[in-house]
Image (cartoon, rainbow, N blue to C red; front, side, top):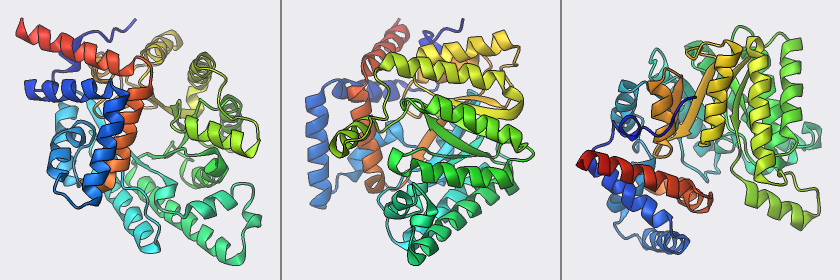
Length: 388
């Protein structure tokens, strides 16, 4: 069994100053009160136009983001690849709504694909459909495109055209691209468009990847049906498997609108479905490509052990592990050191524009049980090891 306890390997790429910064940030995140106060103060200062972006960039931004532009991410890309950890460039600007913004974001995503072309240190690209589409159109189309008016159908077709442009660029460059999962009330639309792209671009290999959130109790059945569909169509099904990111919002909306909660009854059920999905996908390796996006040590070890049991080479490019930049280095770097395929999401964008992403990282590290404590413990172990 692989071990994630070697802090020398986990933090080899970190300077002492990096460790001190990480120790400070995760110590703050250990306190929900400090996180709440820090978010409020940051928002206030930014809204007042006070010059605090430099401070943000030197602290939490530097921990969780690669830079403000693709080129600013190059040192992070190179540093990680020296340790055999790949990069997934994630343009993390949110909240745009105009057609001009959607076009600009589409072009930026294509630029990340261009950066990845012929660069083995950047094995994937990624995007959110909400970055290039009106949320209301995606929501109304969730049940059926036929529900749209002629004007809405025109807007929807533009969304599909943008997605197709991105996926064609990925296909032409042979850079697999993840389409991220989002809220249940737009996810059927995302799945529909994603499968539409797979029909065009996944005939020879998995270029387009759908994202499946296993904190939903219906996703294991969906995954099985999707792989069966792809196999029948003689396609390669690309899947990024995650637990999910919208649990509180999903539960609140289900309670408010009076429909069945789509979320698993408890964490154990989610963990079981996640690992069952890994087993199912390993059993269908000839028809799939998998990126296991997880910060969970048990699931990471489970998949590593599963590859060994199934006789699947750990270097097989159809199987990747992935984590977020600034988190779970003990998983990423120990897996990479052991020879597995590993990549990290590297968010980037102007400091002010990625604040919502940074706030989510702070909230996640505050709310996920044991996560901040584990990060702090490992950082402090490595600081002590270096002192000795």
